[in-house]
Amino acid sequence: MKAIVKTKAEPGIEVLDLEKPTIEENEILVKAKAGSLCGSDMHIFEWTHGYEWIPVPVVLGHEFAGEVVDIGREITGISVGDRITADPTFSCGEFEFCRVGKENGLHASDGSGF
Image 1 (cartoon, rainbow, N blue to C red):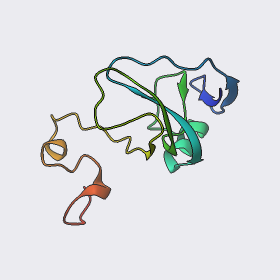
Image 2 (cartoon, one colour):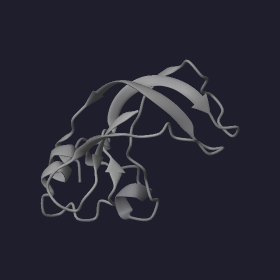
Image 3 (tube, rainbow, N blue to C red):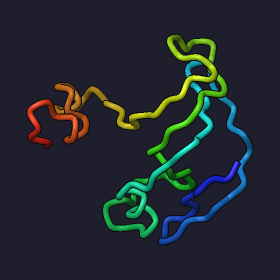
């Protein structure tokens, strides 16, 4: 598969041919049909100060829509062939905003953000 990959802790990216990923029992595999650039992708590309925590190498493109092509044994409620998109925001459950459901300021129920 073609992938946009941040390979080095410096400005730039590479377009690489990668093997089809294998999934774990609690994962799904999605064939991307559409994608978008996010502002954070640009910061990662430019290696802007504040993005040094990003592990490299990493495949970019967390804003996408696609079709489920494989599912792990522990997955329920999703089937091969389903069309999906994803919210790549994960809550750690530890910090104040994560504990109250505001792990991303855009999801704040009162519109206040952080």
